[in-house]
Length: 260
Image: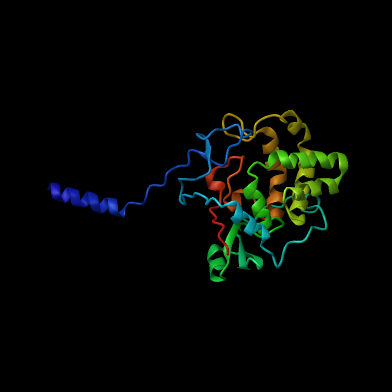
C-alpha cells in the first residue's frame, strides 16, 4: 500500500506544472537617486514565466554596437507627434529585429518572434522599430542607467536656448539625431503638461517609499509615455535593460544583445 501511494505521488509530481514564482522585487539598477535599495529593486527577474538575467557587456562590446552601421537608420520626423498623433500607443505584439552584419545591418519589424527567427533576424526589442532602435542608441542606454538627470539638464538648456541646443545636448549623450529628436519632443511635451508637478518634486528620488514612481516621473509616463514609446521604438524596458527607474518584471522584455 505504501509503495502504491509513493508511486501515485511520484506520478502526480511528474505531471504537475512547474511552479511560477511571483516577482517580489522590481527590475532595475538602483542609483543614489532611485529611492529604493537592493531589497526592493535589482537587475534580474528570477520569477514569472520567463526568469531573466541580462548579460553584462564589456565596454569594448558596447563600443562595437555603437560603431555598427545601420543601412536603414530612421530619419528625423517632419512634425511633432505629440501634436499630430497625441493618442498613439505602441503595438506590443510586434518585435524589432536586426538583420545583417555590423558593417551594414538592417532594422525590420516583425509580427512575432518566430517570424523574426525564420527571417534570420535577432530581436533587439519588443514593439515596432522606431527613432531609437539603432544599436548606437542601445549603447547609450547600456552606458547611462540613470538618464533622468542628464535628459532633464538638456531640457532646461532647451528652455533657455531653444530646440537646437536641447537636441545637441541629447546628441552629446550619444544619441543619434533621430532619437535625440523624439527625446526632445517628449521633454517639451512633459514640460508643458507636467511643469507644476515636476517643479514641486524636482529634488525627490525617482520612487516613493512604496515603490511607486514620484509624481513627476509618473506624470511623464501618463502624459507622454504612449507617444514616446510608439515613435522611439526602443526603450530600456523593452530592450531588457535595467535602469535607475525600477519597473515590474512583467513589463520587461527579455532580450540578449549578441548580434554579430
